[in-house]
Amino acid sequence: MIINTYQDALSYIYSFIDPLRKGANNSTEAIANLQRVHAFLHALGNPQIGLPTVLVAGTKGKGSTAVMIEAILRAAGLRTGLWTSPHLSSYRERIQVNRVPISQADLVALTARLRPQIEAFDPEPYGRPSTFDLGFALALHHFRQRAVDLAVLEVGLGGRYDATNVVTPLLAVISSISYDHMSILGSTLAEIANNKAGIIKPGVPVISAPQRLEAAAVLAGEARLVGADLFLAEEGGVVGPTGCMPYPTDPAPGRLHGGFQRENARLALGAAALLAEGGLPLDAQAMAAGLAVAEWPGRFELVPGTPAILIDGAHNGDSAQKLLAAIRAELRYTRLILVLGTSRDKDIEAIVAALVPAAAAVVITRSTHPRAMDLDRVAAVASEHCRGPLVLAPEITDALAHARAMATPDDLICVAGSLFVVAVAREALGLAVPD
Image (cartoon, rainbow, N blue to C red):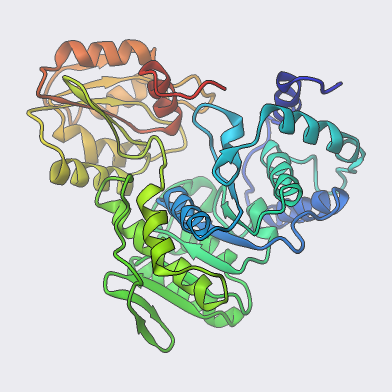
């Protein structure tokens, strides 16, 4: 394949999707996956070596935390890299420098330049790189080309065996841990936490959001095992081995709404304080300025109107509960009209139990993603909790139309359950940035 255009580059990147590939079934397979990434990056010149990074893991809030850390660094005058996934409107969102997505031209040039090395990579014995592996490698090379001072990397899945865990960061960050991807990460909170804890490295400080006891014990045990100082971003400050350090400024995210974002802001602020202790030029003014401007579309994103529409990517039971709590605490409305769609690998029972009983009407929809859950399956679960009309609408644009038809001007329409559903909803509402 010759890579001359942006579409050529995307087609090449997506050609590494293997529909038959499944998550690792055991630690041996998981270790092999990480070994593959090491070997692949070695074949591409080890772009991760010498690149200063912050690595952010967690079940919920890791993307929000990552963008807040990035915004603080940028407010201090540092040149930043940002790797996140998945994207909402454009693949280029995943790879950003100073919060600007990689240009089409740069993605084309980078993919074309690295293609000979990618094609020369011997997949034995670890297997062919995944699309995620390739995208991450492209991001690292782009960050090196643009000479970023520090790259903030969001873990894709889990932590211990994720492709991003090939780096040795300046700081490891772990946001709230709850139940998600249980078929891969484990069925208990301790198993999930153990996977997240894998980003903790010897001698590298780690800061965590407050966790449930089961998860907190796992993180503390891992930190002791590898010899890393563990810090906690508590309400009153950063608690570490030598005591409590007050936050340098108020942990208030200016543009990121929802009470749960204050927890993420405390984590980002604590991370910045630790980076400052490590020598980075981050003062309280930069921290406040960064928190004030950080943005993360599709997370408690309110679209004004009559009725107003709230878009949120909540896709597990814990995040759905936090979403509803934030709606009740921060928004005024008469009735809640829920537009819900999710993926097959999610705990639909927990999501439904958290959101559907609060809704006066529910519209079930789905994205076009291959993992999207069938409408009938979601509807069967939702019907047990629904106290009003239940409508099935395969197309998200139709789902929004149904919701608007049922709503009064004072009602609130909430779209939730999947970032893939959120992405299409934002496009339908004219919020997506053209690619």
